[in-house]
Image 1 (cartoon, one colour):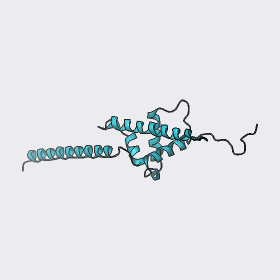
Image 2: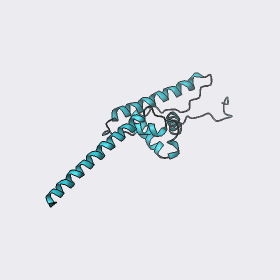
Image 3: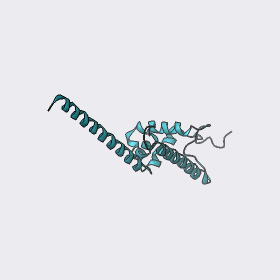
Image 4: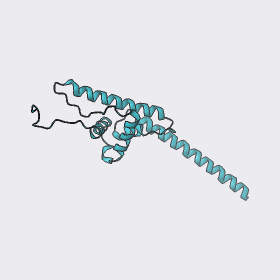
Length: 146
């Protein structure tokens, strides 16, 4: 086989391998992203919230992440306010962080401890909120004193 034919053949083979890998990676990545919604674990939610702009499912992932965050916050705060002795599990600052800021902070928080990743998604998110935005609590024994 001539040098020229061998070079062309290797070049074609390299192109086919690159194309196959690219398609395989895209399909795997898309399947993983689709499999993460609805998120079952904190790792699934982290994957949605950490999506990058070049991901074909970026918009869907970010929208799902932010919608999940909004819904979990509203439900947690609604349940805590429904009882006679309301006690919020977390207290968002005023003004609260943007959804983008909260999602980025959640990703960093979740990635900082691998044990968090296996927990249910909502447990991971609420744990993050409690950790990052604790409420000031009355000191026991100070109630009623002036």
